[in-house]
Image 1 (cartoon, rainbow, N blue to C red):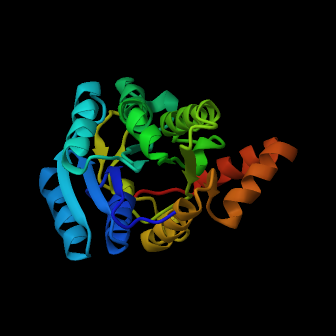
Image 2 (tube, rainbow, N blue to C red):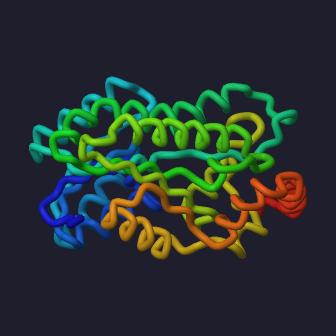
Length: 269
């Protein structure tokens, strides 16, 4: 799969993984449609893409609103005439035990952004992706494979994303559209400085024990772009992540105990 003169739409493109994917594809000559809520940051990403050799437009979008997602797809088609790939990357996270949550709407917000936002964008882009025999990318997480304490709502949204795109992949067999689900572990992105806390408000902090194990964004994106080039069906990052999946099959209680122990050492900083 080549990227030159192909059009890729990326949600959550104002920072982190989304921004870095956009710039990487721009370096390969792609046309980029960039979506996020932060207009200023989105414009900065668009300028970085243009300076890197690609074409780019910024479309401020709240992916929790179906009409906004439809507008995003329509403007993409009007500008570039095709959609060759959709990278569903917009996401938010949390740090709270279920019993300590005081604002239960936190679970709604996580599902709306992480799961339904991807569903809405995919739904409206699908007819055009079938025309181009394009690629759907879902940026999920290892928490979409197994449970993580204090991340219950986030894990649920990523499990939902995994199930949706696994099912859609089967529906699309024979159409020429491929589906790639990406499952990173801890990546050094801005999302870790904007976790939703027990009251549903943002905790502007990161977690000390996670910092030691974080993968650089550049390394994460390098793996994602290679998987896109090969049109893989799945990308599970890190040896530890792959080992965890085997452990879930053969010794699930041990995996639970490891996760429980790890969460006890987490401290905000």
